[in-house]
Length: 556
View 1 (cartoon, one colour):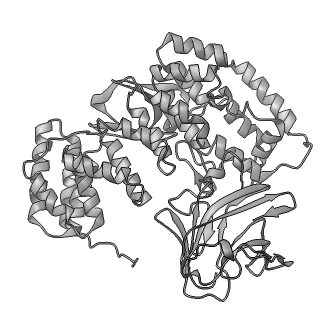
View 2: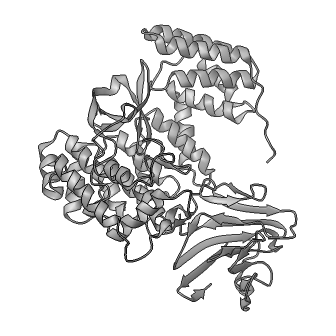
View 3: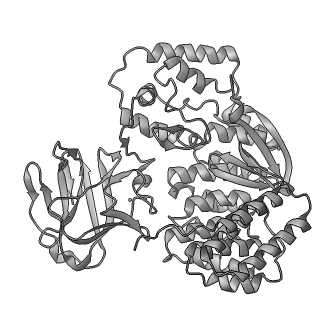
């Protein structure tokens, strides 16, 4: 890439000036902390409401954005877990002022507080942003988060619509678990086969959270609308917790008895140890092992800085010890650390939520679940108890073949991070539309703006690369690309290897005047296909670019 701006937007694969931190106001921070302390320890709602009114008065009397931000953050933090709070009489006037703040963070915090106060204008504003497909993805996601946190009463129909929105589909599916809506099972089951893997997992979790939904899920499994093999062990266990005889009978019929005796588990451990201790038919594929780990374990466990935080970070564990790995995976309930003992909460709407307590106060309990943090207000709880089971389900590796297990074990035993093999299950994660997660680059030249990867320079003597952590075998990549001003040169490298000089060796599908559509190996064989596609290019606009590589044959 030599000059100007180059933008890449995924079309098939789910492929300003610096702002200094605002001036902090000690008085505002102190007020916010004192308010949070008083509010969370208060046992009388009218006391806390008086405190809110007093702070809203303060917000109206001061014209300092940093002061406003501190106060608003303090109020919003303290009120987590309260869906609705009585609106102070002076709020509408103060809100008019805060909406005009030059600080976007102040406006965002004020909007969230307005929603908690039941301000209809805030609700309408957030919904409008959420529906606006041209709005920035980050703004739409924040709007959805705010509406879900406040549990807006009429949100379910909009969430149903968002199941067809690629950028917000996953969050919408997870949010639907909090709403008891008769149409939800039909929406999720109808869309299931078009969903990416994490979205399928979220759909199954949502459908397993209520007895009524679970019965519909079981019916979908019986008709193969949802493959039984897609349903993970923890979802099976969750359905057993639902106090519905029809559900429990169907689970036993479809999956059999989940529990094994300790003797059976030990026998299984010894059998696998004997098998995996001997050389296999091929060398383990560590990149494929990472792909299996991402599918099986990464929702809960961090490894080499990547993954979830529901369970412990296993980077420093004795992962190279086969006995350690097999014992923990095959018998996760043998020893459950106190910090990782799951809690089961059933809401008054009969939703079942299973997770690890992350935080709790007089107002709410926050659970870490495989789908993220969930705040459950205490006045919405029907029951709460500690689970006798680990968050790690039994039967986790049962679906895998010997070669797949060897790949997984090899990755777990690795001394450092390895590339991730792209598969049909994870290709959606090439580009998430929000940031450059799983990419390596010089951030001076590469960024994400409004859901688009942007490469920019004022002129370069050498390429500046954006490198995916994924590796591929055969593939088909379809994307949209725009070369602003139709100046400079860029390209899409694939099947490449880094060189000692810091460049990349391998084929490049070219982008640029006189080069559109050509195939070039800049560090090796030179030009491989010299016919330009210039005549088909919409200059300065988005163009569809497709690359297909199967064995030694490449088509662009």
